[in-house]
Image 1: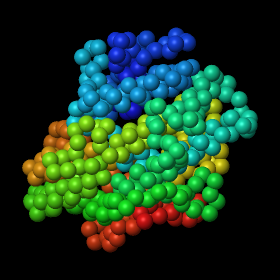
Image 2 (image 1 turned 120 degrees about the vertical axis):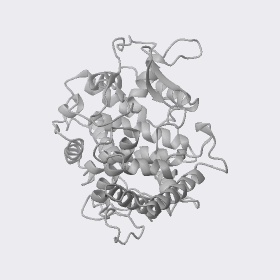
Image 3 (image 1 turned 90 degrees about the vertical axis):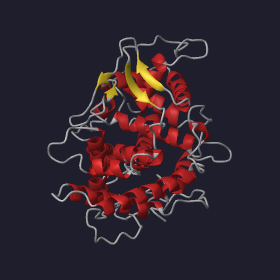
Length: 420
């Protein structure tokens, strides 16, 4: 389940201290008939459950935004407790026992589409003018109210409080977290910038500058191992040994930023460095991605319908005057798989295991059944293909000179650096 699915579950099923569930003090809760459905894509072994798009629209446009905010707080504590979400029919929906299931890379890739800046401008136009028209549906109007109240209000929010007198800018706070974890900036500057200047933010001394060259080398080695595994001679053992070593190096880099120490990172999510920045960023990016994941009522109100999420964002960006990233479709497509890969890397025990890697690299060979290994291999292929499109780096070419300087394609005619 994604973050919105988990918030719905937290609202309906996670008990408070008095044994009750989250409710509104003012209006009736219209979610009685909402149930998750099996939404497992073709070719995937792990069951995937989700609430229907109509149910998510109903939830995100609920007339009392404090219900959603309380769900964010409730869900944070559920994740921190490393529990599971099980529907009354004994269907396991989400499992937080090994990880939060959220990763900062997911937020980073999605934010590079400029989705937050586009919707910030959209909400601004909706509040101060009627340029976009008057929403004909209460659901559209209330979604915009909730988006502003939850993610753009001035006072400190209990649910995603990464803003304070010490760090007053949400944007700068996220950029600081991305830079510390991945050594990368976003591909654009301030929303009002016309020349592409980077938004100023506090840069830490402890930064994973090695992440990009290591990650790109890792993806390139994965590709070579995958190709070798499809040859009659089988996978090259030396390649697998190199993959295990690279996985260990990347895990140690990320663990260091989270406050890791010998024996692994702290078990409790809330005690890990950057965990709240990660959680709040993923919740926020999922909220806005969800509303353009299909031709929702908001998309229809804006007359920006399309068959792909990237094209919807491009249309909305053009309408409000903030151009979306030209490769936003690739960024959307690889955000989830990249987050899954890095979550596995940080957990250890799989991608740093020779035998497991041999199995994964050959899992898509003809005749092999669908499995967790094939799910993971497909995630790698999705990231490799879309990373090439978004950055221009030829991961599949072992002779490519990967220098460690990654640049996403330009959004306004001027390429913006991602890695300092």
